[in-house]
Image 1 (cartoon, rainbow, N blue to C red):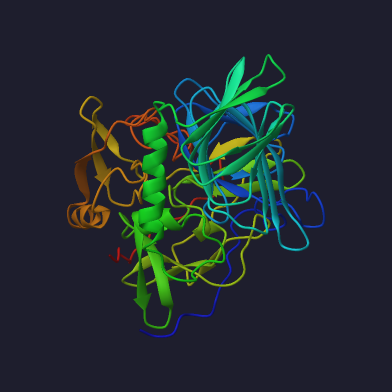
Image 2 (spheres, rainbow, N blue to C red):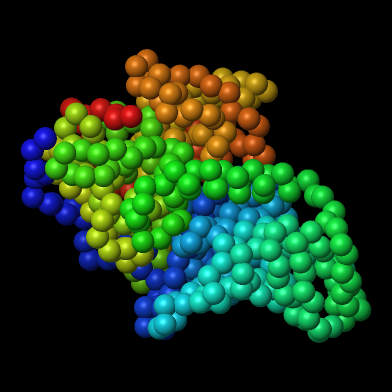
Length: 437
């Protein structure tokens, strides 16, 4: 294959504004983490004075935000090292600190206001991580997997793996593996320690998510990204391959001619800085914050790792785009919250009771909950050959004809996406290109 064409950087979004630029809390010390999973009713308060609004996948989460789940809601945050925090229905969390010290140490403090949170902390001795609830603080200094419940009159910390220290008005308690510390919120948070863990209904869901991360993170290409978050999703929803003249590339399953990386997503507005693009694909984190998207004849669009981590205030790079490609432009009307820019196909629900769906080509993983379908690469081959394939997807709480809010506004078969006119120009289809698997 010939050498790639000279790099052409196509600005995605407003030319004069960055992507997801946020006011810095202290000389570029602000961090973002990923809203990596949502199911059912999940809302986010971005601290802009507009209250709660519907959350969606891959929304950047920063210090000061709040996340709330309804009766069917579940959500997960993913941190730079792939540590995760998951919440179940009727839970509210506040991101109190999300900073980077001059030394490079990361400071993360999440406050559990009510409900239940599962924390899978992978551990870094240099970082300062904690979860607070009521008047207690759980210090996370070593790798640990735990569950924290906060009710009206009591609270509890159950440790599945590792060990944590909980400090509060009644003193400090060490909670070891397979132990539970309970707190009486009506009696100065007096605590008791039990040498067992009472099983709860969402424990199995949390365990499945941890197993998914462990299995697919282990298949990662070495050193393709400076941060680990998003690794398991890239390995589940697509594959790495080597192309002469380009090196190691990644491409999602279920794509071919006519697909481009900006077909499904949304423009989200931040006062003072304009709109930023947020991908609607379940794997759509790292490829939109690092590296570039390159179009290769016979292969189609693929993600090429490399360069510096973009954070939120830089612009995705597009390389060697075909003549038919038109970079999408951000809306020009100020003050909007979230504007959809969905043009790509989505799965069709064939039977809600049976969980059968029809997956079309160029859907790129939309509508497939992580880990729900085995041998995704083989299913993608069928879609490439026939243009679609049918499969069963296990019932997921809050699943509305697909992956819930993987694509903002998608409610399953028969729903409508926002028009391209509402979000500027949309990318045209490609005359050439195909999926590589």
